[in-house]
Amino acid sequence: MKVKRILCIVFSCLSLLTVIPSCGLGTVPKESSDNPIISSSDIQAAPKTQSAMVLPSDSESVSSVQSDLNTAVNQLKSDKSVEQYEVSHNSAKIAIIKTTGNELNLSVLTLASNQEIKIAEITGNLYDPKWSYDDKYFTVNEGTSILRNTYVLYSDSLKIKNQVANTGMLWAPYSESIAFAIVNKVRPAVDIELDGTTDIYIYDMDHLKSRSILKATKYFMYSPIKWDKSGLYISKDPFNNNKSDTVKLDMQ
Image 1 (cartoon, rainbow, N blue to C red):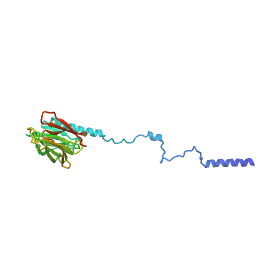
Image 2 (cartoon, one colour; image 1 turned 60 degrees about the vertical axis):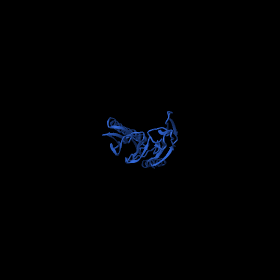
Image 3 (spheres, rainbow, N blue to C red; image 1 turned 90 degrees about the horizontal axis):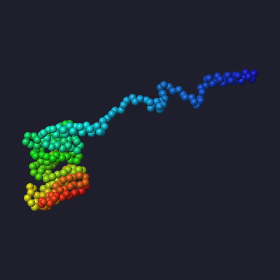
Image 4 (cartoon, one colour; image 1 turned 45 degrees about the vertical axis):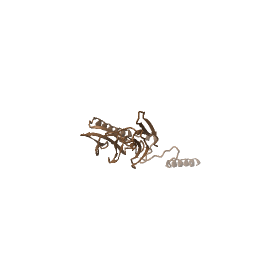
């Protein structure tokens, strides 16, 4: 009787095991197809579905600008009517002096639009166009003697900002200033082309202000020869046979 009771208990336990699921540690629940688990190895092996858009690099943009500039310069070199030209520092524009008939004319070529605009107000013996350091202005000289007239123009509107009679000029390397050699009223010790000697003036083009920084005497005259970040270099030219001296001014 005891054996029969034990067998009944055993059969009852086996029946319960078939009904209740196991909770062992090694069991992994089955995921539904709607929310699959992706392993790290699967992610690394997954192919790229779309390549990234390739944008032009800065070097490509610079190369394009340089190509346009080279094309324009080559055309100017082959044009026999072109006397002089000067490229702006940012390579965006070119100031051009051309012969038209019996006179010289000034024009500006904008490379982006390939448009050349003639500046009808300025004619005569034009030479030596120069851009300001940030290309906000540019200058051109007019005249046939040591005393010339320098026109200062806006680079955008091409309108005349100012004009200055002088014997030499230089743009500053760091500001909207120009060094001019201006004829004074000091009678030279010897007969020369000018009625006076020349002082050095600094003109602030933005505010149309000027100041004298070097005064010449009847025995010599000044002229600007170089202006960089180290200073302004002035040639001191005596009227005798002595050699010219160089004066350096700290403009900072």
